[in-house]
Length: 118
Image 1 (cartoon, rainbow, N blue to C red):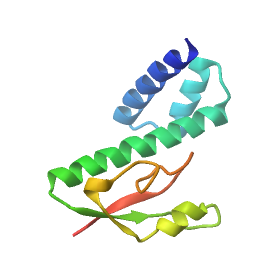
Image 2 (image 1 turned 90 degrees about the vertical axis):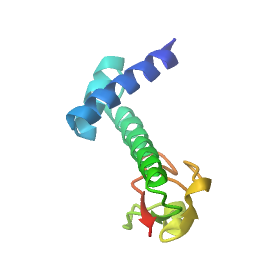
Image 3 (image 1 turned 135 degrees about the vertical axis):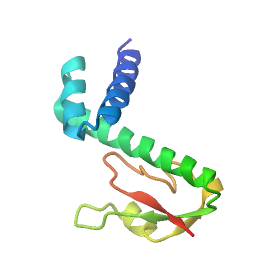
Image 4 (image 1 turned 45 degrees about the vertical axis):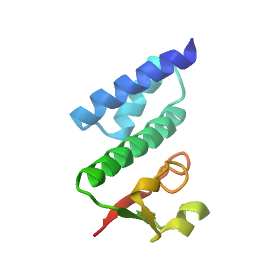
């Protein structure tokens, strides 16, 4: 199944790439070559999934540090989506964090992040 192969290759690529410190571009080139897919599609997937992994790890570290709230931090420029722009600066309870709702990524190639409220 192509979906199963994609899932396995994506996990493998992210695990190895993040450990080695590979760039998003290098991981995307590898994934595109392995799956014989378009580089830009692979880049979108790698970028979005890396954002997801990084924000989930951040949430877990905030829980360990007993931080109760986080602030949504959008990268503001002419490419920022309206959804991210509206959430920029808003504080959310860590216990209510939901990827795609109030925790990045909100969309493909999301560049937003979170910071702790202390």
